[in-house]
Image: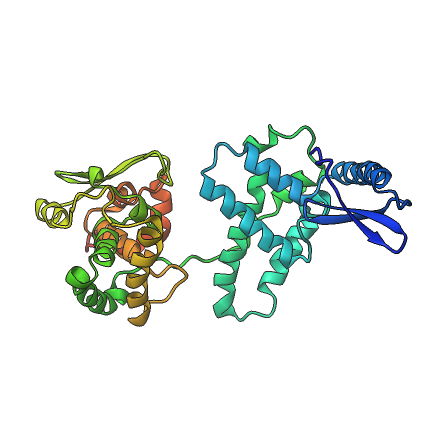
Length: 351
């Protein structure tokens, strides 16, 4: 990265000093002179030399810049999230963006990160902490995916061992409908009342519960997605589905007709700016869900899970996978496998 030649000059006693901030580091050098013109030349030369020496070392800040420029296979939000979560990884192991890459992305650093994240937690909290730790570590590995490895001139030797560190084993609880029914009855009752007083929030509730849309999909949902037999989640100029594929979520004629009652000629189903569609309107529903006793890191997501659970129970896992937009039935079965109703049957033993 070539530094700008501009520097700031200031006086200390009889001498002039030069100052410049580059990649978060402020460099201050003495020019050894009181002549301003000479001080500018000397200051630029000294600071440029110092920055070149600094940039010759591969630091995490350089890695972030490289990722922003070359991760063209990732959505913009994915790039931002990967960097944000990797900052948490750095903080946990006592490092920062000025740290050298070969000091941060190592096997020992990754194991230290896992240990610190779980340290002192009870069994009840370890599972949630392990899930979070695995997510953070998975984000840190995105910088070293097979696609990204092709963009680097050289890769530190430690990366191969860093990528081999296994995630913390987690026993994933499967989602069940039975233990949510009573809470959902209350949630539905309260959310139905939003129809006239907060229609934007009501639409967020309706599309989450009856179509299983994610929060990002709610914000992107357009009236052009609504078809006679359902809503088709699809790519637009500012949105790409998580799976990269479009999907049709079937709705009844009555549900489609009900949804169209809210069409006021806007582009998006939930009206207003992006902040209202992604944050404000869905948060009204999320607050109701929390108040009714269903807790979790993603309160609104509970409606999507409840939708998927009902689809899996009534139609099957393959349909649930298609409606939810999962990559494969295996992902769906990880959470919904116990929802298929068991029917009494006699197994014939062949002999």
